[in-house]
Length: 425
Image (cartoon, rainbow, N blue to C red):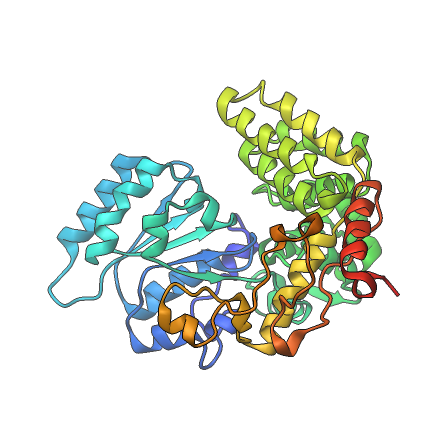
């Protein structure tokens, strides 16, 4: 069959849709809107192969509304305006707004996104955007403010196994074959939570078998992929595997591997901004306080790429990658903010101590706001001990130094200020 397995198995209803129960399960937010027959504009953010396009198509089918689709890779401002005009002309009074689905909306330029604003705001179309990139980086703020944001997750093991079993028992082609899923570890591992990749691997494995009875084992899957390593990656989803290897090479202090994976991305046509953003994230997450200059250099590399473009932009990116890989590492700030967020979630909105509150009015002063606050600059060394955490959280430790040479100085300063509170046990 010429139609790929992933397309043949594409769900037509929410009952057949696998995964994303937090959005479309019984009682979930999107499910409620769909069942009510009215949806607002939203953006689906998640990795490839988790059902973004499928979900948009199911919604349009369920609501029985016209469905227009654009790809941000091939469409320009004129295409957007043409679709909006067609949607406006084809809509009847009181009918639900046509759905405009834009795949890879993060690739739309500012002018393309601007051309959508009026139609979305007036309800001429209901926009459903799909993106693999953080929308806050790539989608303009006015458009983002008019859309809900829903995050889709990589499919879980049980979801993938359900999909595999559905493929071999329900697909018109595969169900005619004798297929046994004897081992699934390799096929699940290579899929990386991506349904399309999973089905592409299954299809490749089945096609590679010469036996009447096809037994899927880890060894057979690995053998098939080694013989044809890109066959299951027709749409470039290996992109996520390579960026993972790139970041882990930097984290592991291997500049050679970092340059290799960067070269793979460059040769594969990766967006330079995507690489630059990952370097900024790595500088903050993995190098952190062990070398604060890393974040400055990563930002400078990002700015340089934006100014000079491609192919020269590869040089500052390479310089940054080597610098980050060879820098000392610390994730203490990263762990610290995650600990703080966890503490906030577990303890709720603790009141700010009175002496830390602002007191711009006389009433606030009478109520004790700011009373007793000690201004550190009035004391020797610009420091004095006082309570800064909420009453119920005094003594909580969130930042733990990781004693690289640079961070050791910060740690020693904190011990000199706070004494035993900062002494690691």
